[in-house]
Amino acid sequence: MSITTESLVKEWLELDTFDAETRAEIETLWNAKEEAALQKLLGHRMEFGTAGLRARMGAGYSQMNVLTIVQTTQGFAEYLLEQFPTTARSNGVCIGFDGRHRSERFAKAAAAVFFAKGFEKVLLFSRMVMTPMVPFTTVVEGCVAGIMVTASHNPKEDNGYKVYWANGCQIIPPHDSGISDSILRNLQPIITASDIEAVDLSRLSDFTEKTVQKYMETVTHQLKADLPSQPLDVTYTAMHGVGYRFINDIFQSFGLRPVIPVLEQVQPDPEFPTVKLPNPEEGKGALKLAMQTADNHGSRFIVANDPDADRLAIAEKNPETGEWYIFKGDEIGILLADWALRNHRKAHPNENGKCECDVKYPIRGMWYPQS
Image (cartoon, rainbow, N blue to C red; front, side, top):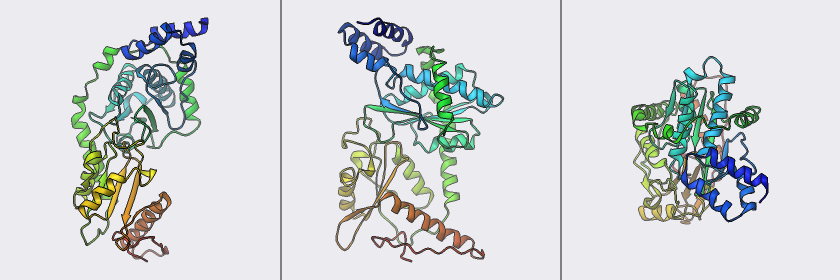
């Protein structure tokens, strides 16, 4: 064993006081003299970029674990104090988490660091939420930043740490490199495992429910529009994620029928047992159960989210051929733009400006009549 590997192992075991499992993983590799594996885990760190962090969960600086979450959050907190010297602590941060393995504990670890750094407002959701809740809350609550613990549609072995700026957008350069440098200056943990356990999610349950309600009210107000006169039966899959509760609330707020859930995929399950990759944009393979459920209920429409409910897929069944058509991302974008323009013209009929809209659809749907 080289002294370099030995020193890395010693350092890790000194710093990782949070998780017996990750400590044991490094100790086992050390005892087995697995130098190459140890160098892979300890010899380099995850790269912090504009999307934050995303990697496999496990021991070492190159993976997602409580220690790397603590170190990352310490660096991020210090960077926020530099960028917002007079308001960072008072305006605070928002933190959310999804249903993946360890997401809740990672979120509590991040919250514990901000408390230790003297942040007066740390808005940690008391239950798993969809990713859009974090940038929304960051803006409406006037926070300086938001964090969402999720790996989106990645495999079950992964987790991630998404970062949002005060404007509700994901960070852009040079903030990514600034945060990365700050992390390297703040590697010594300032909290303990007991500090993480002391973070009480239940005390923020009122905040969580009120904020979710505010999100629904805002969406309903901003997207007021004429709805289809004919009731629609929409099949929905959460892809083993957090979206079902939120999609039901949104449909209810618009007076739509409740969605028809894909029962095998409707509840959060970090194992993602029915799909290899929980990405609804993967095509018919990912939507197989949704199509079966829709067929069984006579539903022509499918709406699908990824596990943190910030990715969308839509499918429609051709009533003439019986085939399912999965809309491409650019097609969904065109449909949304067309819908927005139509409603804008209805709301502002006397505007001098004129928007021409002639969208050709692959299938005649009930939501969007042909131009």
